[in-house]
Amino acid sequence: MDNHEKINYVEFPSKNLAKTKAFFTEAFGWEFTDYGPEYSAFSGAGLDGGFFQADMHSSTVNGAALVVLYSSDLEDTLQKVERCGAKVVKPIFSFPGGRRFHFAEPSGNEFAVWSDIGEKQ
Image (cartoon, rainbow, N blue to C red):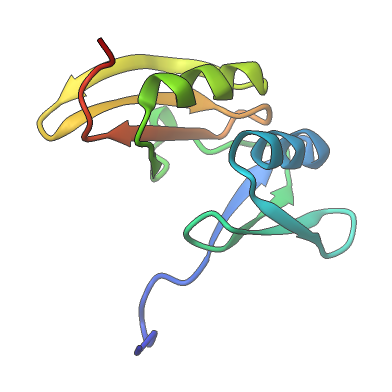
């Protein structure tokens, strides 16, 4: 596979690396490798990346790109991210092609989760 000029890695700021790592480990099973006290790389997320210590966060209201995860059980994933400490910033809504919600992890970075599977009955 030719990876030349393809998206390979994504980085996010984190106000609290420990809380961010704990959230993604518990909620989604991501794995982390620390590179010093101010940077931690993640894997097992579908796309590798990292979090760097900073007093900012990534949010669509500030024009940031939105990383969207897929779920085969949207309601279950919503409950899991809330239980693990995320704040839901947009509850589940429908759009052409499916449904999704947006959440902010403990350091404030916004992510979304979508599904093409209908609502549980």
